[in-house]
Image 1 (cartoon, rainbow, N blue to C red):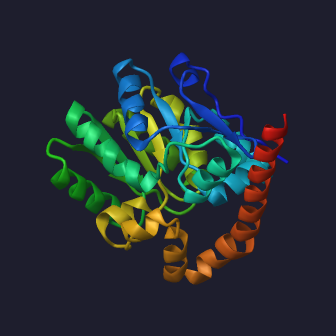
Image 2 (spheres, helix red, strand yellow):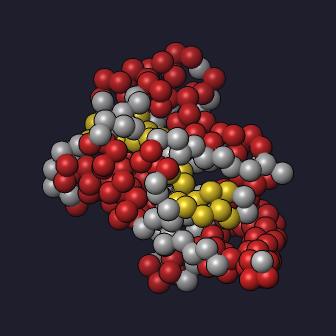
Length: 270
């Protein structure tokens, strides 16, 4: 069984509050604290990588060694999933709140606008990166899009395309890079690229360009608070998501909560 060993070597990361859930280390930060940390690190000239595991990501971090090793270089690991927040509470080691990548694209863009920094939009469906950047620029005066790029299918096996992506990013010099390619493709790309732009912060955000652009409807806030955003997604894309949420997700959630409850009981008996 694989375990995440997310890197927190830098002193700034080492001082952040964190818990362990099913062997995976998660930082116990609010969304605001996460953004503040990124801004402080940018001010200090240090880059980083934010990973936002949901229930499916946690399952793969626990059970897939390759994925755990892939994400081991992350500097911040915050919970993008209410089941993780609930399980941590059952365990007796509460997390501050859910910190979703689909929310961070907004709050980090606001921070970029506030501090005079720019963000790059990499990936997404056709046209969504440009539309998302336009929406954020309208919402946050002063926000600057450093560039957009939608790599073609199979780009990761094309040295010329990979070199072109690196060249575009280095020329743009963004402070933040949003990568919307789905997991684990976005994590693989971030790991491959971040050394070329070491002073930037990287965030894999899945379908979030489409959410911001309005081409895919996100669950209402009250559904998100109830922890049912996954059900909203399942209704929208049943064929693609049924296995992930129903066949893999629900049984893993049962094990997760059982382990959390057992850890709390053992803690009381210690």
